[in-house]
Length: 220
Picture 1 (cartoon, one colour):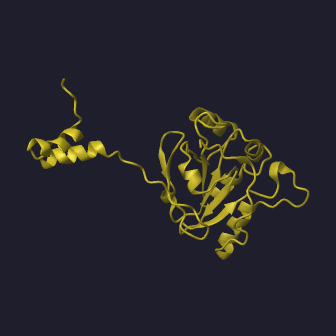
Picture 2 (cartoon, one colour):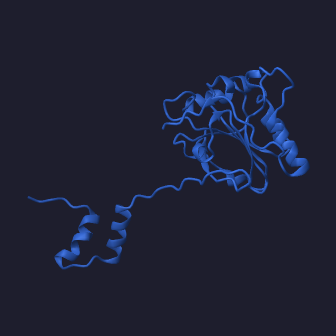
Picture 3 (cartoon, rainbow, N blue to C red):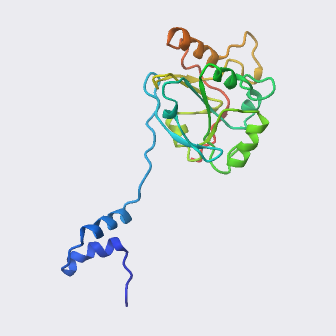
């Protein structure tokens, strides 16, 4: 009976048959037998360099954090069907115009959706509709594997992160102190305050208030 051999197994068998593989064959076998793997970003830590990442936007264009080196970057974890996100991006919500306002000062704003396929608010088409519904001008990046979300320990939607001009993570926490607008006292937008601190003092006075919202819909 004739048995079929892959190129890799044939090359491995050649020495047993008294033959030596040519360098070209050995290189081809190595490529076939070892599948390439993409490196995951390292863990994000306040006060240290923010892990770089590359994700596709809704048009399929790759966007990397490092593309904006030299600028302050806000990263917003996003789920268009989360009630907290619906409120925040709604007509009277704090995120309705926040990104556009800060863009006027050169700040880059990125939304990341780490929802796995089939989960609430996930998927290309749902997010394309959400951009129109919420009148969003900044990119929405899809992280369906959850690799980037987990590297940043993104727990909720919204969960907000700020990276300074030097590429250092300086803020990781809540959007504000008023989930769904139900503040009993003065409303404070923590992200606004963090950006103001950076522009004036170069440091954030309240870098990690506890985030609130829906859990990020990871696949596992």
